[in-house]
Length: 168
Image (cartoon, rainbow, N blue to C red; front, side, top):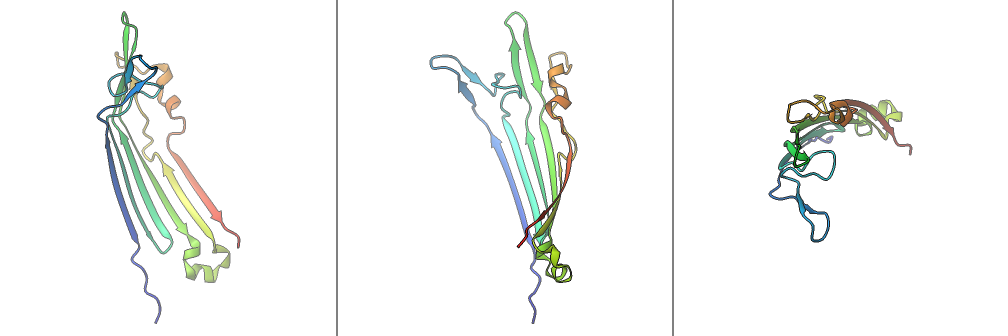
């Protein structure tokens, strides 16, 4: 008798991060920055109070697919001066990525017919499937020039086809 075909492998994961506090002390004895309540240490806003990460995958006999999704809740940054306060609102951001792959060397019937497939893997990946970009607005609802979506994420959706070949 021959070997039976395996049932494949399924993988799921879901992570939720809930930040209760996120403070940075810039200098000993100085004030602390509350990254969850209007302060920031970079150009990307403060820290998101909630973030989610999900992953799912299936593989069987060298063929497979993976899906990943990420979400970060919106934040705000209180800037400007006491006389002219200026708040920037950083919208929440959700992204999804997909990968399809074929480990051609694991398909024995294909390798027997075409020996050059041994050690070859082909992957098609799409990052940021829905081409989402974070939206940043000021108090009037306008998007400041510095925070135009194409400046924040110049790539947007990317599609990549890769071929890997191991030589034995």
